[in-house]
Image (spheres, helix red, strand yellow):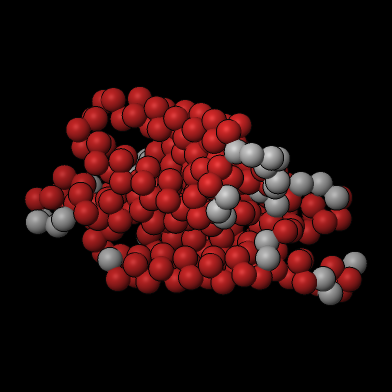
Length: 275
């Protein structure tokens, strides 16, 4: 069955797409989890649906529309997050709901039927064409190169933004870069797991990796490897069972996360008993 599956181009493309997505999630998801911006990333991912709807309405590639909306949303959130303070959750909720509402409105107004809408919502990695792999590869290169160049600055602003300001680092610009890279990662993940499930694949591998990491570099590496394991196993299982690939990937990642949390609680319980 393995040899048979690898004989199909769509299956090979899916495996490559999963690995590329895992690299992006490992690099960006780690900063998102440490900075506790998972809900913010969720707002960007759901706002991207407005761009998908706009793409259908204008007759252009929905992914292009999602890219524009995601980057625009990243800019809006980055601009207002310093002024919002306690109201940041409300801002994220407004962006989250507005993006979904605009997407629904544009799709309703678009002439004809919206094809592949379900795959944009819940993903279908088995249908990623080779041309999209080139775009994903380009986005991964942008993410990896940017994080590599500004690694120490990103770490400083992620762990202690006020300290970064004291050290005369451009904290707002660095945060804008992180949020912008998050938007690019969201666009990439839409093709893998869809708008609804993006936030899980972005956060869960990094959250698990954090439990076993002593440094940010180790966390990025572990999160990338875990993402590759989750996407690859999810693709294989969805192919064997003939079930949706995006949902399968997320369920595997969620199961692993809950097992890790359960194992941590059990260890703490026994350590308290010994003490």
